[in-house]
Length: 575
Image (cartoon, rainbow, N blue to C red; front, side, top):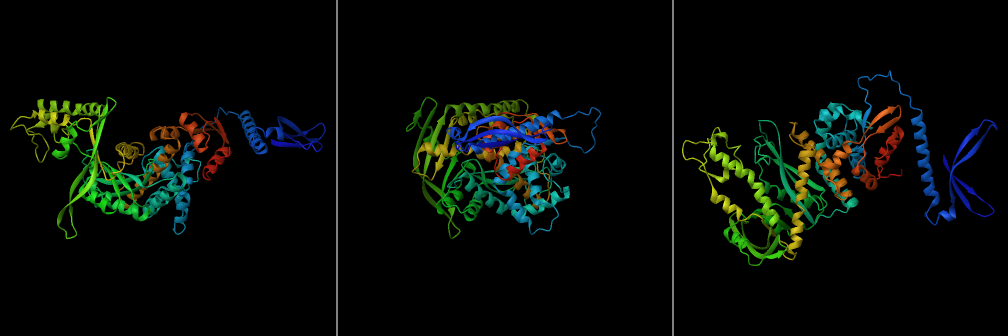
């Protein structure tokens, strides 16, 4: 089928129609049959800027649908056919969306160029693609990823040993790759870096022995296993910028300075405002930012603050109520910090910073609801302390007086004073329910601006949840440090890709829902070159509008599937 252009030399007009050629056995010659008429070009120009280009595309689509229909008509089901070991008829296809972003970011170019000087018999880029796509689709071991490789419409001609070999290689490119991604995201998505979010989390290893990196520290999940710390910078779109691993016993507050130095040195970034939680709000960090001309927006503990700030928080003077549920006030306050001077001696330094205090009835109710399980456990602990130990009493112990633990076993000792509920501790905590404090160097920004800036921090907390829940970054089953580094690099690439898809979809859907939608886009081979699909949803339809990949077709030929995947690698969809 083709677009027929019939030109009338008398009128000078051109008529468009869809036509096909066929052989007439009676007249023994080729003839033309009109399938559908579209009209004169000069009339169609009133509706279409380029009628010929438009209807060429229309006819190509009609031709593809006709071929598909004929293909379906020719399917013959062999009821005696049997399955054979190793014959995979079920394939993944949702990864086409991941492939689109992967190639938009020119990750393929990065790895192909780096592999030119390597003496390896496999394609490094293909290994990275498999590990990245599997980390999003079905995160598991590297062996499991290898076992799934034949369910992709890709060249996966490599061995499991090649995968482990690639992990030993990838760690060398960790820093260069992050810079490469940063530069591409700046160009493609307009990333700005004058405001960055920072947070720290850790990932555990189900092992007993520690080493230089895997150390026992303060686990976010209250586990006794060795951990690795990860610091992460994120932009205002929720897309990660830079990550770095630290030994598990590194304090959170000690990670931001080396990471910020690397960010400013290697990423061509000028003055930045760092947004982070209270764990990074230390004298060293504040002084570091101020001395280098950078800014900060940090949360400030209220319950653990000095008496003067507590009194200011509870004093009703100065608060402005916004509606019935929210109040706010602020002041410029001379903060005194203790630092080490050039002579290595401690010294006091004063800086001006803005303190913003706000109260929310919703936060108040939430704080009380979140405390309730700990209070119930505390009551049980008082009644029957023998049921608990140092680990299981976590969260409730602070509401109980006279608690003593056996240093070796961690069991609660009850031979001395009996545990009693600490009513005074509870009442002191409740005073500050609903109150939140933020401190900042940005004295000229309004209170509302600073609060809006700080609220963006939830995105980085969400990113860590994605890595732990959806990407299943931990527990880490690798032991060699180079392969551990590469494991986290793969997770970083996967996180970047899914965050970009979220951004392109207008942040309407969670990463979990996007991943689940793409995971379900699979197809089954029903004929030699024909596949049937059985899933479509709101997200996959939205991906068609934003990425140009049509996941709504029930049938696609192998040629059409490969064409879609080929186009995903060029960043162009003309379907």
